[in-house]
Image (tube, rainbow, N blue to C red; front, side):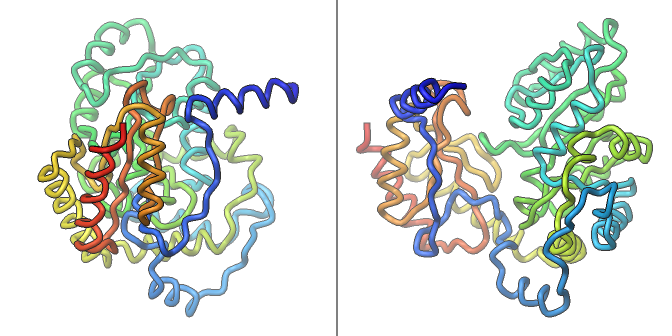
Length: 372
């Protein structure tokens, strides 16, 4: 692409208030856009305990098939298998895991039925796979079942994909109903637990004892897990196929041992975070109560609270005003979300105080009421 075309596109993005820039979030600003839902990544006591007991290497220096299947990552996969009851294979990120699974296991003979609001990594995988795909209405199991009724006789290979918690709306999928439909219509099922791992312990699927019913269970660790990487829980034949056929797995340098050991450390301590989870639940309920009292609408029911503002220019102005007042609110703009639904996506964590929440909601209310 020529330089002139690139610059022209950048100027166009600036003109519609959709130009992205990198910014530092310093410690003096209250971060309400973080995915560190349990505060694990910033827990000094946890870090001190970890570094007191471990001194892992900082680079794997190799892909998994060469020299990157070191002791720590193999132990992590083994421990995950003990917890989930099925084999585990690690990817470097949730994005890699989602896109790789779809493009590795699906092709032009596959029909993929995907929730309309599934993550970009899922849609990248769908496009790369060359599979036919249809979107069903967000969280609408009747919409999904209608598509299954219509197309089940035309395709032998159907994959249904859903997340558990959706970060743009802060709502939850009915995983039990998805499993019921799977048993009725005999399709493969892929579930992404990016925003539920940690907050819901080992995840919603694990808590519902449905691991056995999920063909591809993706558990990214960069959010509630306070780390990086993604576990894929699957049958052994699927794991072996990934090792032999997944280009992102085969040709990527493995995560550093320090990350794998930290992931194992958190996995083993997951049962010790009930107090953090309880406080997060309280913070969530209190925030929803404050928003309602101040007339700020949201349909969210989880620790991720979505507040629709409207257009890109308005949300950009409010975000900047809130930053000046000491709050990091990342504006999610078009075309990431549909036109007219630019929104703030508030990520709560147990380290936010009641006083901070009360002041924040008051300031947000003022900005929403005065910025047009």
